[in-house]
Image 1 (cartoon, rainbow, N blue to C red):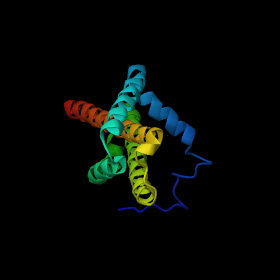
Image 2 (image 1 turned 90 degrees about the horizontal axis):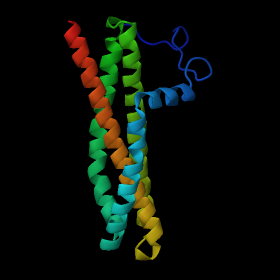
Image 3 (image 1 turned 180 degrees about the vertical axis):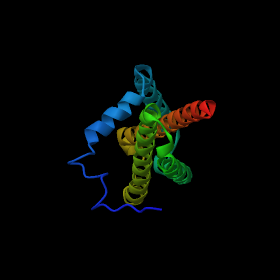
Image 4 (image 1 turned 90 degrees about the vertical axis):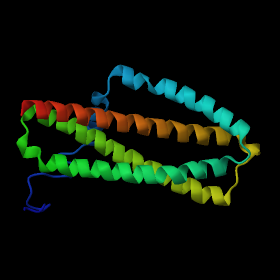
Length: 182
């Protein structure tokens, strides 16, 4: 089995040569339809309404977010592990696919990479919230700050679930087509 040598390999990860953040973002948005992109608006509206009720009905918003974060960190860890295993499997079998399938594989890899970045950002958000929340208690006197924090949390969770669903759907369709060709 060959190992990756960054000095002699024709594949470069250097952003100046072959990899571009703009290309990644463009590929990411090309995976979604306009309706799927517009579905973000109801998610934002729903999260603001839900966060209003949460901040109005709970006494300690920090404790609520801390409990939610504690449960979601394991979810993110498991799904990020699943995503990394999927990337390894796809890259390992990349030589078996034709040019049409490679475009779909690139879309899958883009989605999975975006999911991993989003999941790691959420874990960092939870850690920051946990650390800062222990120092500064934002109770009822900071209604707007609590509303924004809880809205952001709900939006990010729903977007993460949407992204994970999209990955599962694309991988399923790709697997179905690949198996059907056999």
